[in-house]
Length: 499
Image 1 (tube, rainbow, N blue to C red):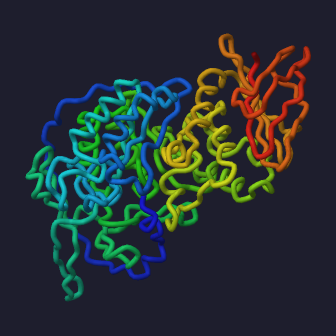
Image 2 (image 1 turned 90 degrees about the vertical axis):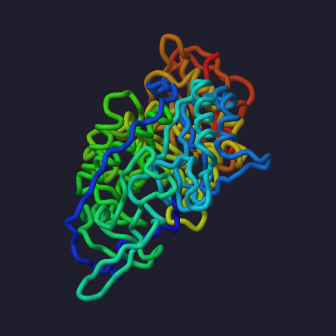
């Protein structure tokens, strides 16, 4: 989600103009969906997903390719690197060609119709998108689409109504003349929304009650941006479910990333997941941006395990490590985040498009010691790790991340152990015992300014081990009890693996 839009707060409601409630509702059926692309369903064992974009993704590459063409051309190398699923950006028409998809205009226009001054979306045309997905599927990579369901923006026309003798004009009429009812005849008017933003951060016109009251100390609230869809009414719920199923069929989706779910009525989120994801085996992860672990756990409970959640508290733990830049206490990594609290529902990540975007409300980049954070999430027993495209390609971390993914595929198996009596302010250790066919590993991290080594009783008895990252040369040995000294260079990471 956009940062300048994320910056909206409940304080902006001080300028809210409460307008007369409107009882009128409408609904119309959707047209049949086009034929599906092929897809697979099960999440890969020890899989790794990648966020396949960043906030300022270019409209075209230096070689003139659209983003869909760029991603399609990278399918082979991503598969070889061990990426098993790709999260695509919002694929539908926004407010114009420069809109990166979160300012949603027409959710049925995937780069097919001349609307908002362009046929292509910011990322390309429908044909290019389908070709991209076919390339990814052809290399065994699952595809998750970013589903933005909280709001619409950039209406086709204003609508007028009166309150206390005053006429008000608001941009809430969405009739999509450029699409001419193809795929769906549903149109949106002011009664399909609770309110609309006058301009970013300039207050709201409101004519229906917000769907829910703020909670989690105000971190969760209904109105975020644009024209806020009214999900207290079944017509909008049913239409958005129809759209979700149409998207799934049209693109052959393997899963979903749900945007801004803490700003939507939770009963709607649950209903959408039940009717679109259902028991299909497709994956879903929601952006419920709670920095507090208690709020994360509460949201997981209120959604009944229907959706995974991005581990926001763990991201902020990594940011604290980064900001400490050597002075942070590494024991803070022990049993950390939602990943430890609810591994089966956690998607762990280091950075994403929001945390990386300077000037935005969620700007909180992990700048220092970032590879220590990646080593942590990619060797962990719990959580489904997500790699950020910009880290992999733009920031030059791809080779190191690829090595860690290879270690994950080969060695990150078996029971896990935290070495709470060994860890200290600079040194953190974590092991995976392995299983009948995988040898396991010992992860050691060091944010200090000098090489560190600690004596540890590991799961590996009478073994010779090598740092599979290549960061520390030579071998180490353990005795018959598994005891050995496990070194790691300054500001570095090592993954010791039995030979």
